[in-house]
Image 1 (cartoon, helix red, strand yellow):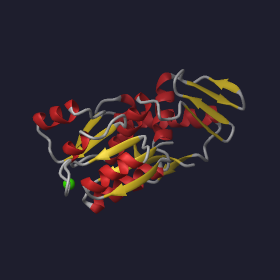
Image 2 (cartoon, helix red, strand yellow):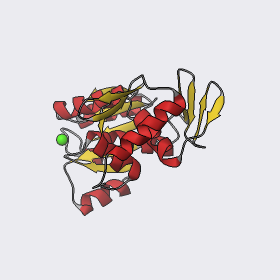
Image 3 (cartoon, protein in one colour):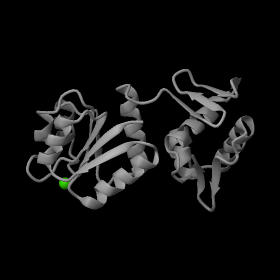
Image 4 (cartoon, helix red, strand yellow):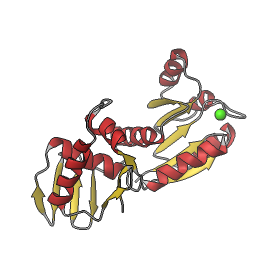
Length: 215
Ligand code: CA
């Protein structure tokens, strides 16, 4: 997993980001102003920087002039189109505005890391091996055939491991739209994944909420 620097002066937000990124297996360092952020970014090789814009000492935008080669995701209250354009022109890989959804942030981190190749192309646990690139899953070395949505659902659960995801959220993330209809669709797919892979103990039902992949 990745080594991530969080530059954010609001401690509660910084802690929230760190907590959730570490839950899914990343290692995080925290700094709370632009000057320490720049020092840290230039001294160590990070896979990704989560960068606030309005910071004491140097702003996130100013810092971008000195950061080279490390992917950056801005997480900021500056939400106008102009700000976003500025962020992207300075070389940001993504731009998230506050208030943000923590699950979405985790997903976007995953997407940026995948693009920048710092992240794993496969994930293995117990006797299961998931290859994200070619969308194949193996159990004890034998390929298990998953339907496209089953694979997508498994991927979302694994990427957000140890986080409880509501059925509604899973519908949004896997079926990629605001699903007004039946959340039982999720239950049916979860059941099939559990059966096909024999991982009922890994995919926990979270009472009155949804599911959590535990590892
Ligand atoms: Ca700030």
